[in-house]
Length: 128
Image 1 (cartoon, rainbow, N blue to C red):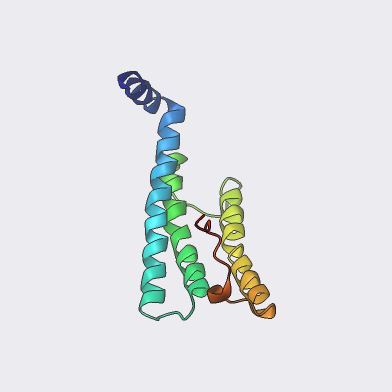
Image 2: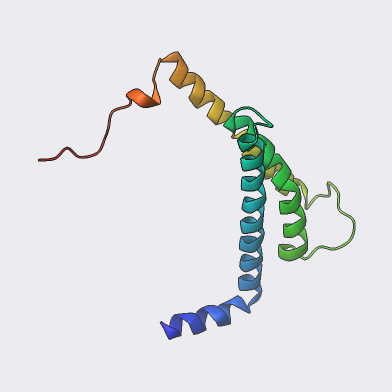
């Protein structure tokens, strides 16, 4: 076990290790921001519906995500904008946010087939 810890500590000091740790740290922080927004919006009924609350939370979380990745992972300083290097980030960020649409689609399919979460079969093994 000690060997693995030593290997990880050595790896974390490499360029690749530092970059991955910074990406991970920014993702953890951004996930916390998104989750907090969702809980506040949905829990306090500021935004009705969990899907709309999730959409709003994810949109808000893209801002700290961009700035944390820009500073920590990419090592960029100074003014930012829609430069050539930033476009892939924003494209992927908004594609991910747009995927929330799949929640609406799933809801519509469930409603159109008159499925109910209370009538779904219990897939747990039956006692023998």
